[in-house]
Length: 153
Image (cartoon, rainbow, N blue to C red; front, side, top):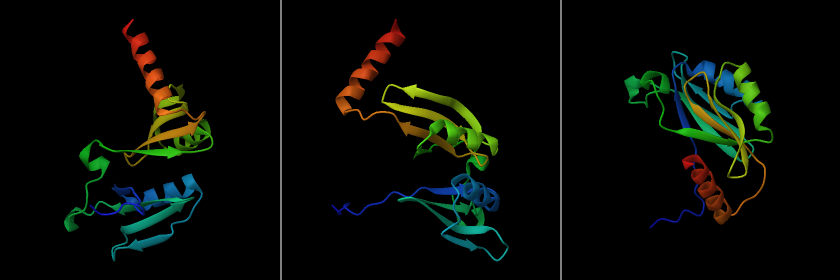
């Protein structure tokens, strides 16, 4: 089994009209791309954003090169990006003001966080979270059981 001690998960977002997405994410996260490579026709071949200790990649879907389809081409997405921020409400408001759709308003949830769901203008879904308090796995299990019990009443 390979060692995963230096493992890093990096989301790679496939986007239709990735140039606009690069502008959106640059404004949204107040950061310029760390690396931006364009195809000869101007489409984004690869873009890397670095935010704090995290990073994510963006590219045009490029079906002619075997690229991954974008959520817009699929009409859905099967992955959500979970983003921890200092102020969930502020981030959701900023994303909504830039054309994102709020799928779930910011809410205090049983696992000790303030949480919202947002779909960006390119079809990618984001869970926006602010940690309210640290909880152990046992505390979260107990809170979940309590919530499910209340739901069945």
